[in-house]
Image 1 (tube, rainbow, N blue to C red):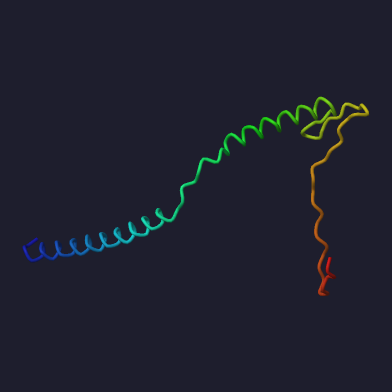
Image 2 (cartoon, rainbow, N blue to C red):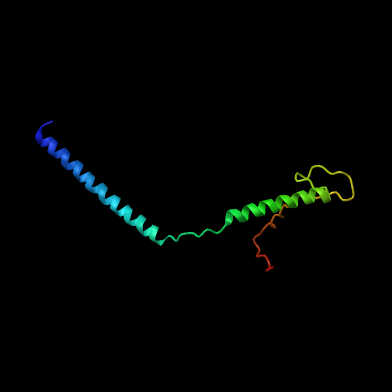
Length: 105
């Protein structure tokens, strides 16, 4: 490589460096604007609320099992009159639409 080719390669690398520095500056500006406009989230205590709710749910399930023979899988029943007879909720399918407009509810 002679001096002329070397200078040409250095020029290309400098141009690429300048281009990348401009892109980086633009991205930093966007980042700074985003960071300035994003509020800090206060500690809402959601973890504590979740743990309390999960514990209460567990106690409720145990109560249903003890008092009503509830089975979370809806498979077993003990035959007594206090047996829990439940089934999971399945929503109804909406009525089939034809070309006529449906009356208002």
